[in-house]
Image (cartoon, rainbow, N blue to C red; front, side, top):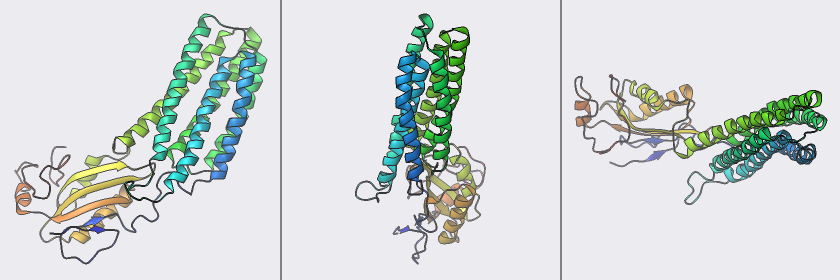
Length: 349
């Protein structure tokens, strides 16, 4: 029997095979970085960050403050993430063609991973420098550190406000927003360090604050590497449980079995699902598909779906009888199904 692809509408075939990309096809999806993100706000934040970063490096060297230099290094990664997000916007806007069947949607995920790795490497270098300064602290100009950090707090608040006005569904943009918030806490700690040096002369506080900033950098970098890695490894989004989704689909009265269930993310904000669904001999494949798409769209916020819906072969019906093991069938459509088989009765995952 033939199989065909449907894009949100029925083709009128009498076959029991049905693929779908959800009602309405691909239109209206929010696929990660997109034209909805306001480039003007991102450019405004980028201008603030890069201008102040350059000033901070000069002052940090003049004041002998590693804390200020570490703050500047963190701001460098913020600026890089915004630049990469802007580039990814243009790449993601290109239509899918040729061998790139998803287009270049994952350009932002690649750049987010690069940003995360950069944060981790900078964190390692600053941690080494901070330990050396704890052992042999140099002189630090506390007043320069304090005033520069206070100005940095103002700049970071302004940059965070700019980015909050852009589309934060992008992993890059949201990552930059979170980094700027981390920078804000770092600048507060640096200001405290400058005040301590001014009032007590305790220069080691500069290295201690640097280590605090390093912790923030490692936390942010690890989060970016972890999230981008999950997307590259085709893992299910953290807020979606494939086994629970499979059981929910199998609970439909006309469904006898769901297998080959895959849930992954193409890019930020675009969860995707595919599955092979078997229905009873008297079931309406088209109606079942529409019902399952409704469940996925409204209960799990998954708009991009591909469901192959077939009438169950006799062997599957026999295997689904009470008392039979859940995987005791030889489905001619899927000789080696991937993952667990979901049925309405209790079964192992």
